[in-house]
Length: 259
Image (cartoon, rainbow, N blue to C red; front, side):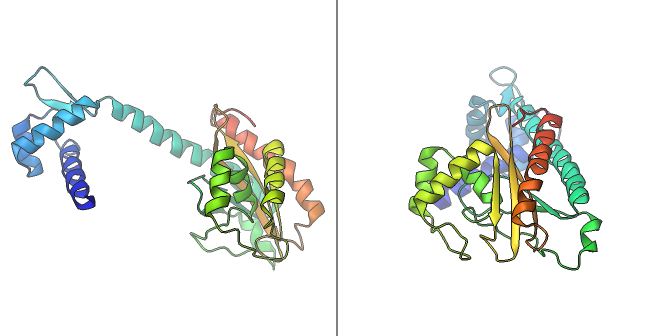
């Protein structure tokens, strides 16, 4: 079954790709010649794509062209990159202001978060700093980034997480009791801020805030991470409104609803 789906999907992609490098309107014969697929297959797939507005046709026997639905994809993609550029600008300012490492991550389900690292040159002034590898995965239950993601799940999604994901204890500070964690996440949801007090790694602390869209849906999480020798518990509380403020500014500048 999977092989059949893969073969069919490959044919669909071949047909869509012929519109990228050729004239905007193509008839079935042209689509067949350019894609290397037989005319019957091209006709069947083109009809299915037309039904879902991915292709449009002028008349019953007219040529096909890309549907306007691709404009929606275009705006979605450009909006995402615009948001990212705005977010990275604010994270650079935040890193410069605090002289610490900053991160941004996007909710991608119930697996570990993979944040993007933003680091101002001033961070190098510290002899002791957090070194993160590109593509490093962050636990959801033990990091501030992850807690913001978990705190914005629905009750059903959160139950699924606790039932299907192993709650790993990384340090003596890691919260592993599910009832305590649920209470903890309720506070995260209420305050729109989360902390990692040496819960994922001894000697490392962090604070994170979420950025939401106009519907109140979480679309990104920003965070400051530093050694606890500088980011003490008192400092975490001091930095929290600054991080949350930057999340609000990212939301405002991106045209999104503020927290």
